Image 1: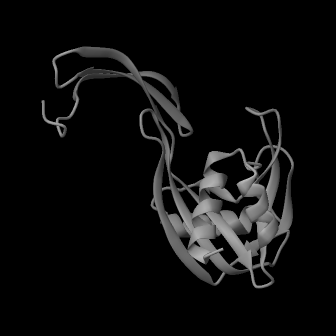
Image 2: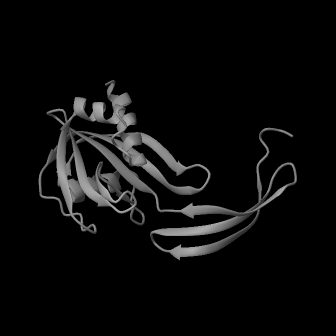
Length: 183
């Protein structure tokens, strides 16, 4: 059996539709060795953009908001789904302004990453935004309370290394940004 043989999809059935937020499918596959796998779960979430916004003073802008899965408030980077026909960077800039009341002048893409390579769960477009500054109050329209917090870059690195950022997209974006900044 060649290592580059792919699974053959036999069927795909929609089992849950919570559009535009999520769709779940059961899939059936034939493996290269002939075995059949049924009811493989795939979760389609919309693509999103997430930004590591660094101010000229060396602070990183975070939002603090309640997350029901962990039943707690988390510090996270601004993020949100791409609107129809919106570029990832435009979505990142829009979310930064809505959630943090901030803008940035120096944008760099840090890549596109799938959240779960087996099940799906959305693609993240990660950005480093330098020369960020808060210009307005946050106005996210999100469910629940949201507040903006500034953390010095060394404190962000310390917390990231200690595993304090439990949201995978935030932890990924922090690690990529620290590497890009050479910190």
